[in-house]
Amino acid sequence: MAGRCLNPQKGLSMESTPAARLTRARIALEGLSVGDGLGGFFEFGSLKTVQRYLENNTLPPSPWRYTDDTSMALSIYQVLRDHNVIQQDELAQSFAAHFDRTRGYGMGARALISRMKKGAHWRDVSRELFNGGSYGNGGAMRVAPLGAYFADDLDALTHNAALSAEITHAHPEGIAGAIAVAVAAAYACRLREAEEQVMRSDFIDVILPHVPESEVKQNIVKARDLAADTSLSDAVALLGNGSRVTAQDTVPFALWSAGENLAHYEQAIWNTALAGGDVDTTCAMVGGIVASYTGVEGIPPTWIAMREPLPDWALGSS
Image 1 (cartoon, rainbow, N blue to C red):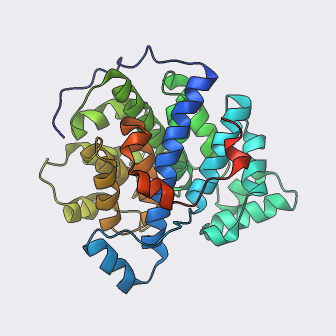
Image 2 (cartoon, rainbow, N blue to C red):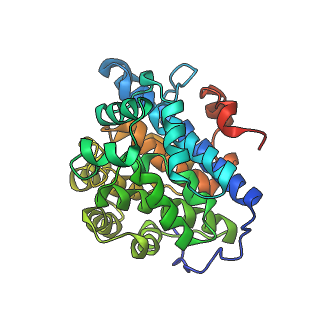
């Protein structure tokens, strides 16, 4: 992606009212959910069918049913809409209230939420089930709307992103992954506000200082430093594609893919899907970040129409 080096201060004049923040979060939510819905088809469809659609960049039939990525992102959006910050108990209750096991939740998340619904506190269950906390990619998959919401205040962003992840992914790697994706969405918003384009290496470079020291951060450095002509298969070989369902092997690839296609939502999602792995989750991350740069107008209208409608319980009257 051609451009010039990003000034980290760009976008600091963006609006910080709850209404303006929620508008940004809604854009990221649209991008996340469309990517998730399309990616979910490739994640859960039969191999033969998936290959046929991917080889020709052919859209699958609608409706594109969203997965747990969007379901949990909707809860984050709801809590921000109602409280302007992450209230952890409220978010945990929303995760439990809107849990639908048919949406592809992982085994750990199903066990955790099932115990929460029986009255256990999320803080006890999260650490008990995962021996100190999960470092899966679930905290990062749902966080782009939060990053867009707090794009005007990165200190508040990192704090709230950590709070949102801790409920289900309390391990430092899981939290680092959530912060990284949230900051990426925030800088995408700032770039859009400043009408500025950047190269992938520069985009990732401004994200890195906000990411806690971790394997996630080390792998994001690798994503930043990949040569401009690196092939998709070589990027996957070095960074992963979510096949291990960890923050460490998902977030760095998602930032690489988003940075490579920041101005092109459709291309970003197709390239991410072609990488295989945890496709619904990588497409959700990339979709939320890239839409924060392109705006909703950057998402093909037919794609939005083909995605399953988002529920009123989360969106409210906004």
